[in-house]
Each structure stands twice: as C-alpha cells, then as structure tokens.
Length: 105
Picture 1 (cartoon, rainbow, N blue to C red):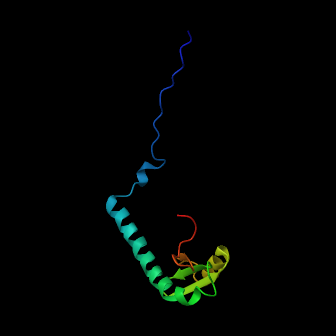
Picture 2: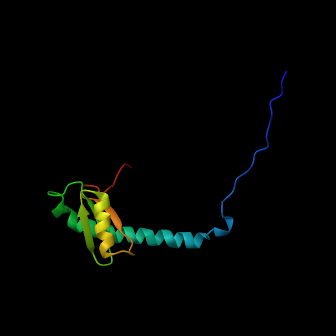
Picture 3: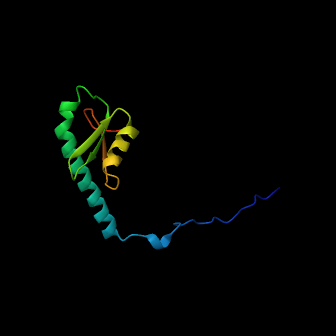
C-alpha cells in the first residue's frame, strides 16, 4: 500500500502586518464614509424627482460640498465630467431611478 504524501500547512498572514489600523481609526473612517454618503443622498433625493422623467437610469456623480452634480447615460462620461471640475474631491455615484442603486445588490 502506498502512503499519501502529506505536506505541512503553511499559514498565511497579512502581506504587510505592520499596517494594521487600530479599531478607533477604522471606526472614524467608517463614520466619515457614512457621513459623506448621507450628504450625497440628500442632494440625490432633492433633484431626482425632477430628473427621473427625462433621464431615467442615467448616472449621477455628486460632489456634496458644493452641491454640484453631473449626469450622463454612461457612467464613465459622468465621472469624467465631474473629474474635470473636481479632480481631487470625493464623489458619490447614484442612478436616477427609484432607489439610486448602481448595479446588482
């Protein structure tokens, strides 16, 4: 009878274990992301009802600090329009429909 060859398991860890963030900093980052999303959603809720008739399922990029938004049927074109005016700002992405969701959930 032939014995199967067994190899020891090699445990893998983080690629850069020295870059672990403390839980407080992770919580702070998550709170900032949630706050950003809420500011974008307020703008989306305000303008979506007037745009939904003529621009259904178009993409909307929102810059919440100024309240500006950019729409286009193509996501990349809307993104490029927003980046031309705000190259370093964070942008929120929504669809002009009932839910605002972009893609599958």
